[in-house]
Image 1 (cartoon, rainbow, N blue to C red):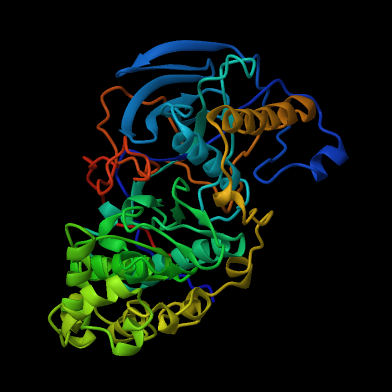
Image 2 (image 1 turned 135 degrees about the vertical axis):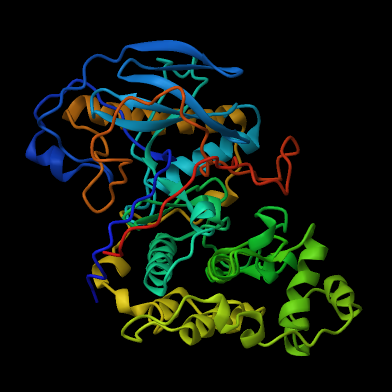
Length: 503
């Protein structure tokens, strides 16, 4: 269902958030066969010529960037465990972009595997609510020299951390949540569980368009996987992850629920850790409350935060735990928990919508179905999309958009030496570059539905602009050189106006 909401002209006034962009090479007319065989993200462009592949170097903080000359006015906007991100002005596209240089991608097996996994998984998706990999490049010309990987990205206006501080009406709250679920469903259809959904990994435009970022921690949806509770950001971590249980796709829903709760309460719901359907619930709660739902300091404290608010789960659930974990949980004090009416009273929500289509009671009911400790009883993504609070936006073309390809379910189980991973990554970069040279296309010219442009008349980035939250960076604590519980995104220093009308 599509509705024109109101005629308010609201815009976000902010520096752009980081997402993904492209690489141009000299243009030659593509054949019809070439157009049909183009990989996901490739759009033919007959008006622009890319020029030569000439590079130049400049120092950015403690790092040196070597990029194509088409990218000028580089300005650091953030750094994290996975790399450094700069904004830049692309003279070929006449728009601002962001360029991420991966940090020491071949330092060890963990770094190399993560870099390869991110590149491969992003090629498996193509959806308006997911940031797609539009291109990668390296200034090195051979495998022997190969040392650096750059990802060029779109720019977005802000991330959800900033939106959470806004007073949103039901239409905007519901529409943002709908888009999260559409993006997550597309990932799940491609065989990908995100595993690291949090406000800083979700970005928005001033027109209320939303996209999901960051595949550094995403995994293929093999069954019965165990995951360390240190893999994901603490405040949005699903119970099955905290307790070392196997997990399935609806782990992301918990995170979304936590985020919605935070948007409602304007504070973290469970100040602790995160995953997909539980994650959705946490996100929703955060959107409603305006703060983190479950703010724990480690995985034990995180579990305590959850049961203090939701209550100790029944014996039926405890019997699913391994003996040592069950012993610990059974020795904790019993908590009755609070009703969702008490956790999320009407006063936290916006007023019911003008035509009574969207109500606080519906949002609260959705939260109660997302934030279920037992994942077997938690709402699925498909069910959430059909919920009365969400289905007013339902569009089969958005919900059912098929992924370009399904991921290799053995990807996460692969083990290689650093040199073997390096060879695989080189092939991925080389494939993109060669296809462009042979077919004369602009790789990933943002399609109308997926485009995310900072403004209608972009200008070269100014060196006086303030830093932005970089949400495309994440940590994976299996690497001992990285911290486990730190959100590696930067605090934003921008101020925002209101989001524009939905659709």
